[in-house]
Image 1 (cartoon, rainbow, N blue to C red):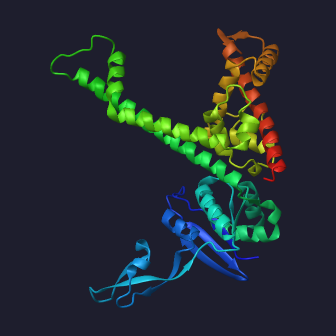
Image 2: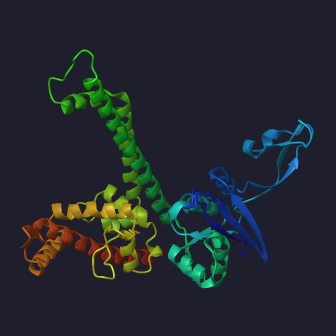
Image 3: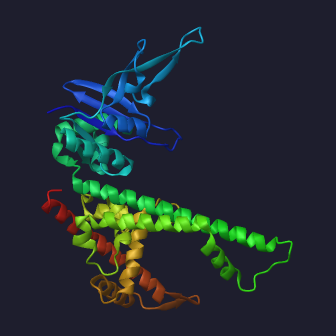
Length: 398
């Protein structure tokens, strides 16, 4: 076995406002070597095997074009304005035979993707472990989160079976996550532009010195303005392009064709909203863990999970939102498999909770029963999703 590289991905900003770099711990035999990667450039240097770990002064007449420009350092001499240049004398990074170990999902996905792609070319591997397993091990060993890079190495050496190799299929999942993020960013930019245009248009009307007022409604005139605004048209075009890229990325996934595509009303965008937050289904040991992550679980007191005063909503909001949109599609397709399940739950809840009136207010109205039935159907859907997706991963060697 070659070197083992434990990686704790960087935190841009902690709750205390502190930024932490990506921590690298390399175990080669019995020796441990530590490196901090402060930004994406340093991470890419490590991926490419060109991360500087030692420097020397330049030699007279030395050709500096042989070095990366961001690797050249300027050092001011003490008690003098004279400056000297220093260049790397030793590099480190991913090498042939290395095994990089990381946590599944989260902000480290991009780094894991890059390491895996280069690893395919040079003979290195990237293995990842579910965050819940890492957390449990950390607590059992009495370790702290800041030392996760070292903890990952120890855990890999003692329980390699807990890790999953990052495969081309996992890279496809990461692509979907990145494409979904790009599409959402484009969507937010387009919406923000529309809001700015509307406020500017209304201000122009109300503050007009010429007494101009639109003949039609403000909305009609605003729609005309939107249709001719070049910036907005470009943003709309970008959003469409990002959505096209997202649909293409989703169609490259086997889980899309095996699970989501057959579901009536579930298109690539909704599927991406569910797939991307989950990432690798092997992160979740049980359907209960996935239900908690999705926010479709039942609390200890028997109530359905929702935001309440004094309680923490610790589920993934993007996944819950995507499931809500999928539930709306179940309702719009009542003859589909899941649409029929929704109707069944409506009947059951109505039988259990007849409509009553208390203090002049209807309790368990049609809207209330519809909401209860929708979330119960989605809970059952997540249970089914965990079972089917896990089966597919195991059958295909995931």
